[in-house]
Structure formats: structure tokens, C-alpha cells
Length: 286
Ligand SMILES: C[S@@+](CC[C@H](N)C(=O)[O-])C[C@H]1O[C@@H](n2cnc3c(N)ncnc32)[C@H](O)[C@@H]1O
Image 1 (cartoon, rainbow, N blue to C red):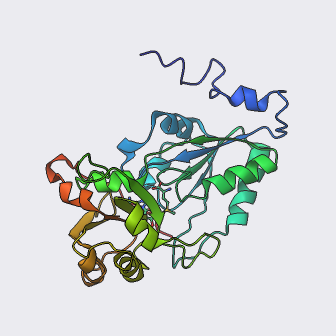
Image 2: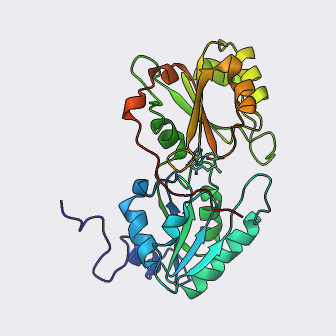
């Protein structure tokens, strides 16, 4: 297979970089391009080729805590690195500060990688950052990544859809009670409308979420799973039912980062197909 169609062009630029940087009427006035890059769920083998290429050549890196430290070793010597991690219960870099850092870096560098766990556009504020950069006249491109909501269940052998057990799946945040900037989730409606649920950031509100799902008509016997530290060192999983989920998560000390899967697909789990988690540390400690 030729890589000419997808790799960097003769000048070393990414496809599209010339177009957004050139006098093409898009109005980008700064020298740099910010790449919103998905780091995948943690196992470095799940990094895309494009993400690997950009990390290997970037002039500046801005990264979150939910990425493995191993990926930071890919950047060239002299790359300007900024940590802007956000995690519940930890000191967090405010979003306006991150936005300002990206704009400032675009004034001084050509290739800036904004590295985010999983996929940048799935519960990662990638859309907000892209909109801000465009508004400020900064060229920006998104590089999709493998999301934790598919990879963490897969590393436990759980398919998130299945011809017999799940024709629809909903990716949903369990965090919206705290983050008032998000629209509320209609859990009772989801109980009726989606075969499977993949819940990000769901542990803190799990008791309430499970109660709402059952109030919405989902049977307490519905299969349920939690995968903590999916794809990396420390991965562990719990397979149970919706009725017992919150109590067991608490009793067995499950913590973040974790993905919750609820639905008949959990019963289709095939542990034999689950890869070994990578021997890498994640998240990056604050
Ligand atoms: C702010 S969201 C970012 C999601 C990310 N953009 C993605 O596509 O995977 C962070 C949440 O993703 C989930 N998560 C991320 N990495 C994970 C992993 N390796 N194992 C389990 N859950 C993970 C957890 O629910 C965590 O609280």
C-alpha cells in the first residue's frame, strides 16, 4: 500500500497543512497548526500512525493526564511540553488557560500537538478547543483516536454491539450532575431507547444512574460491567448485574478511570479474545 495519500507531503507538512496555512482565504494568520490528537485509551499500540507521526515531529506538546507517559518519549528533543491535566478531585488547569496556551504556542511554533486521551471529540472538550482556535485565527486539525468506551470493554472481551444482543449503543457521560455546563442526561429515556450503554465518568453518580435506569424500566437482572484502567497496567473488571453494580463497585473499591457497560452485550463477553493490557502507567500523576 502506498502511503503517499495519507502521509506527510514532500515539504514534511501534513496533508491539508499547506492549504490552511497558505493564502487560501481561510484567514489563519498565525504560523502554527494545532493538531487535536487522540492518544487512544492507554496501550501505546493503539496509537494511530498519524498520531505517532505528529508526535515524532512536533515542536510543542500540550497533554492531559489520561495519556500514558510512554507516549511523551516519542516527541523530539527540544519539544516544548505543557501539562494541562484535568481530573476530578485534583488541581486542574482551567480550560481558558489551556486555550490561551494553545494560541500562544501557535504564534511561535509550526506543529503543535494537543494530545488527549481516547478520541478528542468524545467527552474530551476537543470541540470547544477547536472552536476557540478557529475563532482566534489558528489553523487546527483533528486526529481521531481509539476511544476508551470501545477499547476498555474490548480488553475485557466485551463487544459493545452484537447481532443478537445489541443493535444500538449509546456513549454517555455520567458526570453531568456536577458539570452544569452540560445538558442533563435522560437516564429513564435511555433505559428504553438504547440496547447498550457505555458510560464514561460514571462511577461517582453510579447509585443514582442505576436507580434511574431501573425506574425507566431496565430490569435489575440486566448484565453490567465496569472496566477500570482499561488497556494498561492495573486493568481490572467486574461483571455483574445492574441491580448489584453500584454496591459491588463500592465494596470492591473500583475507581477512575473506568468505563461502565450496561446491556445484554455484557453477557456475550468472550474473555479468550481479550488482549493483555500494556505494561504502561496511566494516568500521568499530578
Ligand atoms: C474526560 S473523558 C475522556 C474520554 C476520551 N476522550 C475517550 O475518547 O476515551 C475521561 C473518561 O474516559 C474514561 N476512560 C479514559 N481512559 C480510560 C481507560 N483507559 N480505562 C477506562 N476508562 C477510561 C473514564 O470514564 C474517564 O473518566
